[in-house]
Image (cartoon, rainbow, N blue to C red):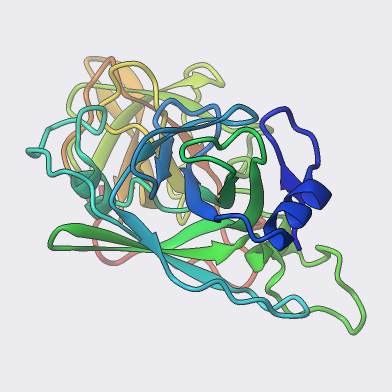
Length: 306
């Protein structure tokens, strides 16, 4: 039996096992935390009919949600879990801050969000604290499918970070690709550059002022195959959305130089100048001086140019 932790953080596995063996009525529910625990946008959901308080984490609220079967395998093979959620519909909005779950799912808002799932053991209906929960599954959202009245998440186990070719009897994360954690320094810069969005930006062309390093202008095409990520700041229009960079150029507006970044995938709507901010990651996992990275040589993009 997996470890069971009560609302005070105490391991009560033996107590729960004894209780189960005694023939007591079993009241089980499932708790779902989609997102980071400290993220105000995280989803705290349960398939129980009323809110459940597990003091170790917080309160989980009733939702129309179900999951597939959880399989157990020996070794490092990545497992998946299917989660189907049916939130109430919300009219489309022009900001990710006010967009409903279906709109966010279509735009990839939930991509790569962490997911943790627990089984809760209740000695009485609604009591999730006395006996608490055992861990059922943990992973990250890999794919999202939006259908009529439901959002289907495929959650890949956290082991996906080591789903790579490894030397025999080696289980450490020794492959450089496994060391990629979502952002790498842009070429020629010793940190992740930050930008403000400037007027004139569109859904696929961003006019940006670099604020860290201050007023830095990047060499043409050096950000090719990197990533733009919108920061989830207050009033942000596109917070947490991202797109791959096709190319970058210097552009001059009103006598001031800015960075113009062309995206591969258009954003759902144009960013808000003076409100939306971004950071730029270099291409994963390692950039070479010529703008290429391991396994993917640099090739100038023929599709569009700035």
